[in-house]
Amino acid sequence: MTILHSIKSKLLGSFSLILIFLVVVGTINFFQMNSIESTYKQLIDGRSTAVSLIKDLSIAINDEKIATNSYLLYADEASLEQYTAAIARYKKLSHQLEAIINDPDEWLLLQGLNLLQIQYTNYAEQMLDLKAQNKTADYMAIGSTNIEPISKKFYEAAQKLTGIQESLLKEGIANAETQTAATQKLSLAISVLAIIIGLTVALWISRSISRPVLLLSNAAKVISGGDLTMQQFKISRKDEIGTLAASFNIMVDHLRRLIQEVGINAEQVAAASQELTAGAEQTTKATEQVVEITGDVTTGAERQLSTVRDGLKAIHYMSEEAEMLSTEAKAVSKEADSSSHLAQEGSLSIRTAIETMRNIEETVSDISREVTVLGERSQDINQLVNVISEIAGKTNLLALNAAIEAARAGDAGRGFAVVAAEVRKLAEQSAASAQNIAGLVENIQEHTMTTVQKVAVGTHVVSSGMDAVLAAGNSFDTIYSSIQGVAVQMAKVTDTSQDISKSTQQLVSTFEHISAVADNTAAGTESVSAASQEQLATMEEITSSASALAKMSEELIGMVNKFKV
Image (cartoon, rainbow, N blue to C red; front, side, top):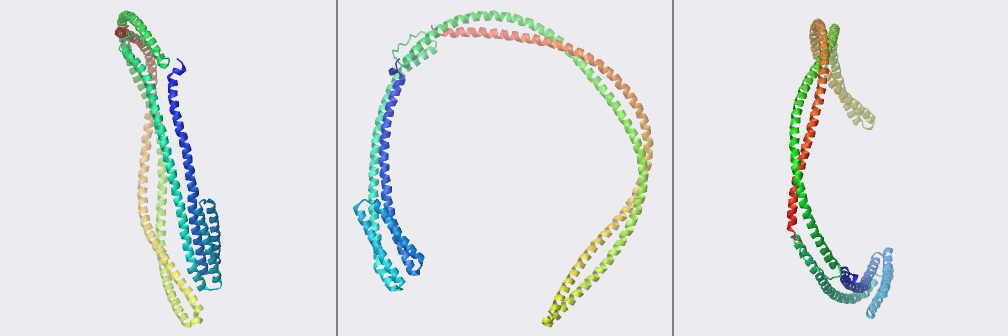
């Protein structure tokens, strides 16, 4: 195979040809689009700018006119400055427009606009001078006879110049569109030619590849059906297809030899697997007998171990109960001693409480008497508050009368009126304070009555408490005698429970030794049983594998027989 005849070179050649056409189309489009872009740029930079400048000239003339009229009305310096700025802006715009105009007719129209602007400026200067001389009628006559006609002519000339620019702009756009259409047609023609050539090359390459590949595909289908008797391919091509055909011939030859060898080996494996199956079945039967015997031994050992463990649990439970009994007995004995001491202390506390309750009863009686006196004093305070309120009311009346008299006295009584007003304020404040005090006294009286009632109830409760405390003292004496008897009995129970705990501990040690021996016996029998079961499982797997191997050998022989070699 050489590079000139390879599929790679054919594909590269065809795609290179198509790429050349694409490069040609792209180059033509690039230069044409640059030309169109340049044309549009000239139109935008030239014609559009010219139209914009012409409109700006009209705006400048209009600004000059507005500034002139404003100055004629108000005679202010700001209008005069706007007038001067409008003239300067017009000159600047005129120079810019003159620089981009190339057509003689347009240049003449621009000169006409400049001439009209000069005339307009001259008349405007005259009007400004007449305004300075206060000759209103004269500058108004100039405005109506000269300024307005010049403005009208200027706008008409500007419209005409704008129309010429717009016509040239439309003509340039039409030329650019014509150039664009021609470029599109040329690109379309070259693209169609490239597509035709590409399809032709693609059809030729696809047929040169698909035919031999189809032959190889049909041969592969025949081989997949088990027929290896076909003849070798004779394709005399020096590209990848020729190499593929040669490799396919070699593969068929190797496959034919492989099938023959597999058939021979499958027959040998089938014979060996049958012998292995027979030996494995005999070994499996012997192992099953061993498993049954070890299973019986294991079951007996497990039962014995279960019985020993149950007995050990019962002994442990007895030992724990004995220890708990001993502990509880000790605790109860301690509690009995503590209760005896507490009962004795309680009896002493009851006696102290009786004395305290008596003191409380006396104190409550004293409180009741003091609270009663407090109620009587609050009534006295209430009477004093009423007197203060009456005095404040009378003082308020006197202050009001004094204020009236001071008002009658005029300027002489003005100072007295101030004093009367202050006295009235103090009287009102005193009345308000008296009312607040009366309210507080009423609250104190209410709380005092409540306190008297509660003290009476407390006195009754204290008397009841005295009776209850006396009864509790008698009960504590009885409890103290009973607890001393319980303490003696619990001491005997504690000694007995300690003896039981020692005996159960010895019994636990004996059963633990028996349980350890039973565990070792059960573990040994379980190990033997597990080993026997593993051996049985292994032999069953060997038997199953040997059977499967024999079956696979038969299937393999059947599959090999399907091939024709």
